[in-house]
Length: 96
Image (spheres, rainbow, N blue to C red):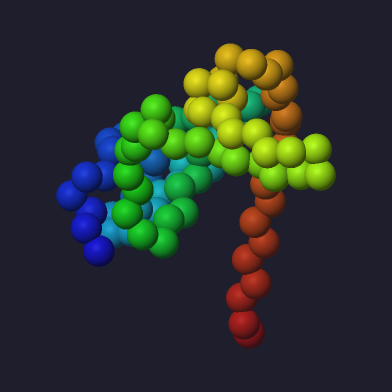
């Protein structure tokens, strides 16, 4: 797999693997904030991460009412932004 075009990743993460990129924040940095900053979000990948030209991508939705195709800019500007606070819990099971 080609990892040469990967975007830069946050320097605030502890890198566990670089190809594919897998990293996590320290426990100390997670308890510092009520809501995790974007730079501290876990990264778990199974292949290369790539940047893409947003003007070339569309989502097409087909329903009984018809078909609608939306560009990334449509999604960003034509809809109300909703923020959801969620908790991610990881449970590690070790064998005895």
